[in-house]
Length: 252
Image 1 (spheres, rainbow, N blue to C red):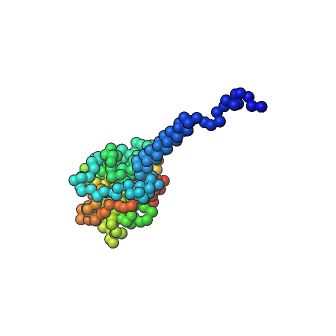
Image 2: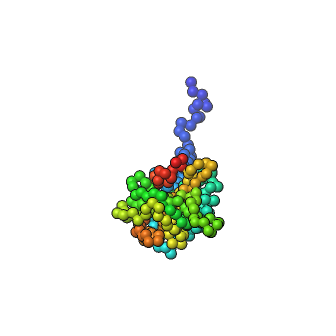
Image 3: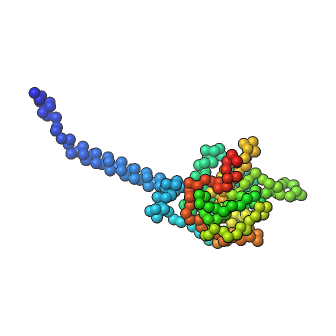
């Protein structure tokens, strides 16, 4: 037999319950949507985010900057670059590399993370950029930094900085103007070779800094008597390994 308490228990939940539940679900959906949009749009270096942004056409192409309109950045010679990148530990360096890649893909919204490489370098290897690289077509040049010692009577000598210079082109290069042993000099105000990745390679007791850089001025890349027409890279493969060349990979 039902008691009075049983009879008084409401058979249906009050309307305020459903109203509250609907508001909670709507607020949850809004928070999840906002968080997802924030993550996708602010971290385009993530491969899945990059592909989604390209698919919905919300990712601007890599911009071809006129030299007078390139973003402002700091210029560093090999000694300064070595000092800058020798300090961070692996975790800090990985965070910097994510920001460098994000900045490049986003057409350098953040000037705080823009470094231009300067100095004299000697070519040690060259190979074409192919499918599976950070972008293609183009050339990847591996070059050793050379620095004038304090004793001016001595010739410039090798310095523990390796430059991996990526030159994007519209078509696979028909000829390679850079050969092993060639020397070239980069100037920040002219070449705008921006760092997009940094790695520590070599022995732990004798670390070498390897920097991957891309020129931001694509009209023509000229060093001495060598000239090479460039084109803004499209598309990017943000999941491709950096550095590009196997010899530059950490542990090699």
